[in-house]
Image (tube, rainbow, N blue to C red; front, side):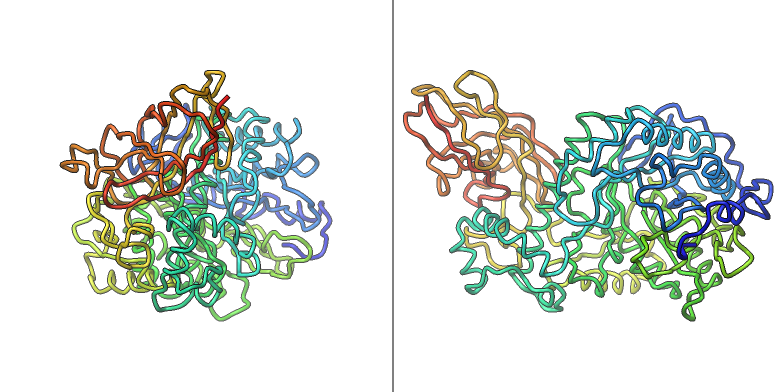
Length: 616
């Protein structure tokens, strides 16, 4: 599709409604009917629901059939959008039996102009006409941490997308990863600051790591043997992802609370050994701030049905944190460049993928992608062809439907998310090896060993069922010496507000300075989130102070000691209620306060935010 620069008229001729393309009558399809969307999709436990019914997503990643290499920006931008061709493409996708398209918007690096917004809203209206929901990517790229969360709100705000029923979700990160060692070097100062909070001091971390606080190498991230520093680094990455997604969610919700938020999280495929040095985040990282989990199938072998089923089911079970699971991409190259790069293998792969999605009771998926050779910039030499519709300039069959596409019609029949329950369990431990690929390999083998019961096998970790009452081990499976991050306990600050000298509640972040009233009580309002697996117990549930979780001012890191009770037990991914805390009865000199959660007589844990209080 993307050879040099092709004349637009020729492109239209090659992709016009000839033969099978764009002819709904040419397909035998399920009786989906004309769907009238009344309200946006919501999440109910493990289910997507819309207008009172469960929605199972049967999607296609969409680029239009006319996408030429000369486009400097998105096909939705002014001057590039061809509504009549897009409408024919959507008719084809509907006829194949799909109910969703995933697309990239005009980009979040700049504010869209009114014409861009008109194109996006027109596309959403056309998708709705064809019974198609739209998963809309609004991110800034694939690198973490996200550079500017506020930029993600520009398009939803400028285009007034809130409340549009056809808009399924905002996709905020496209296969995010931290990059190889040279790129990760930029994280050094954040890493050292995180170590001081997680281990109490850099000196404690240095002792835990045998004297070396440098960032782990690419080789270390991929190693088969356990490594305490790598385990700590993965926890650090978990926290960075969660902070990025938390900020993104807050920015988007400031302009639109009506739509779901997701992130396609499978760079190279989840648990890929080949790409482990690129530091992709754990599939569960940041999921607290996402409405659903989005693995990808790129690590599944295209020609091994048993491996597709077993590894895919393991991945889905690991992703199951009580939210919907949407396979954001599954793909097989059909460009003829290798023995397995053909339409027959592609169709067999799709068949196995659909069997895996049904067997794991996932909430659907999206094929990668609609038509032809890879959309790319002129410097990209890859010419792979993952399309389910042919578009090859060296052949005369452009516009014809591939066998894999014909399988979409019945792909998701019979799926109900309430079937995703388990009668047997696999237990995994990410810290058992430095390379997370090892967890996927081990889990897949264990699931395969269980044979025909595999569809009912769930994944637990070594922290499943843990509470704050005890924390015998720290990250990396080392004994808890009181100066290391507890393996099963973790926390982040959702909100910290301090009553300032003017009597107003001032929201603060790390290293802020707040003026407060001298010789008067200093108050804070706090909300914390549980990002670990262990349940936080109240004093009553813990049977006393020991093992109960409290809001705290860490006296070992700051000048002030304080404590405040949580009001309810807090499970994984839950937030506390907002709690007012007395920091100190009076303040006469500038003082440092270090907010951190504590399991009394067990450990300080989670994000530590230090703020300077200056009396006036």
